[in-house]
Length: 470
Image (cartoon, rainbow, N blue to C red; front, side, top):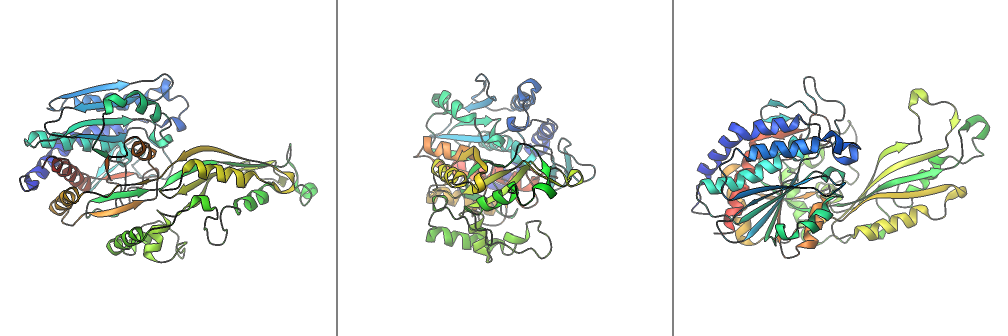
């Protein structure tokens, strides 16, 4: 690291973002490239292909040496882009990002919208800006920075998919087909994670997994006047509520199934305390809660553990219920609830899924017709311990660009790719980081990218990659 002038490197990175990368990213925001789970006609609409073509066009403007690009298509599956850059040093690095997006959502501020790129420093607004359009740009620039400053770098392969926001269900087929091209990476870099603030480099060491599905409770063939049938035909909502209580304590929110939990180690508890010491009350106050709402588990480190290393259940959707203005005095035929169960690293998703199906479907009250149909089962991720030299490189770069040392981070969300890659490459190291910090609001209204932090992460990544050949 002593041979790298981080100040000069960061100035170059800043200029690259300002002169062309941010402009291309803004063009990316304009493309309504919904992930296939949210667009049944994704293939005919062609927006996913448009994002790849845009990115390829940007790549074509760069003075990158030894670069080759390929678009891969398996019949019926979303496309994947790979970029290969010949190494000037030892080792192999695999970079991952995605180009598909979440739905528009409502509630964008005046003058802003999901497909309208708006720069209001330090932010760039628009859907896909921080999740995860910037990731490919950042990763490519980190290698180009090394080339332009005559710093050796490993062989670099970039895997950019278009199905991540749908759970990456198309990715396993590509991982098999592209196995030879992807090689055997010494390091896997993922630019799709979060940050606790914009004052330092945050490195994610764990993410939770996910079990998703629909709980349906049916009781009748057609709606019946509630005055005639209420108290006779059982309420599908009451039954659904009681069934959910089998797996979640309705008073505390604690998950009751032992198959969904793990014992939290002392090391993890200490890391949670370290995160709490850096972020303080922000671990709670950064959430947009209503006045007077209190955390489910009090205590700053406990809040961190509950959001990252303990299972949690959310009901994210409902069917079978009319809107309030359309609701008559009718006992409804069924209640369907979309369940999202986050599971900690180390819990096997298949076993957790089987346990949920078994408990939710068993012994239906009143003979109601009950089913739990799963649509997602993804393992969590826990990163291997970083080598001292690699950690030192990240820390030095964070000090030089942010002015503060790096900090490990837990992430409560899910990146299915990580568990897939860890299973495929058990000997590889992992660097999971990103620019999604407070206020970034991925998936929601006013999604936005913090531009200065993104530039700093670019420099930090370049320094980390360079350290592999130090």
